[in-house]
Image (cartoon, rainbow, N blue to C red; front, side):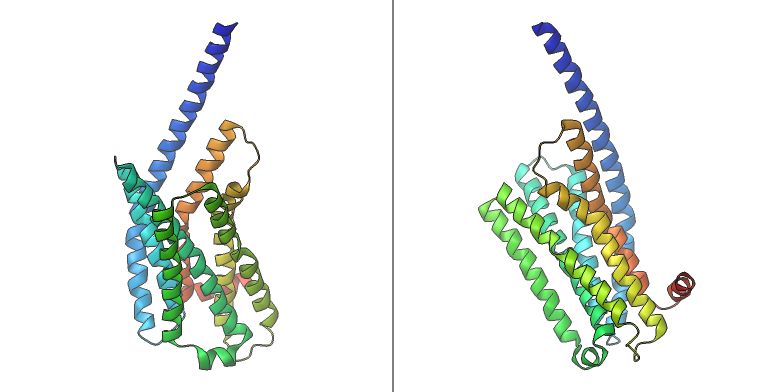
Length: 273
């Protein structure tokens, strides 16, 4: 009887091991593709958006910082693909990746807030928006993510810290929904904003919410769920949710398209008709 149980356990271990290796291989291939595509496109997008900032446009500043955080994430992915032998380096890379994800979520909220103010409070926004204020907000976001990084390096990571971090990532959801709903309600009352600009703003808010819900939310829910899970289910969901995180740099590039006037206006006009 014991021999039968041992054979069963060996078969089960081999089954899980095979699926784990397959999942790891797929994840690594997709990660390499994301790195190759994302690095070049993000650098080009940052340069193009910087030219808009020099023309005294405030809106691209948050998108630029979001792309910079994506660039840091891609650099961390390169570290994972390289598979450093030193575990300390691996842990530091994970912490840097986590802090850059925090910055990404914060900048997504900043983008949504800034776009909401354009429609809901156009006069206030026109006279109060300055590059200096936007830069200060960006610096504050980076300081918050840096404090998290330093705290984890010296204090270590625990389950409580993981739960707090997951809750932090969950907080933007009601804000993003509020900004989108508030913008839609204020659209009819806004006269000073051009129709094409309104479509672009709403499109960007919808895109930010979709990126958050499709790429960030599954991992957050998975982290907050403490119920017992089958091992195979855990491996599959763990891999998929983490892979969605890795796709966020490519998804954020679409925000660059909404910052440029031209073809996107025609597409949005055809969708809204």
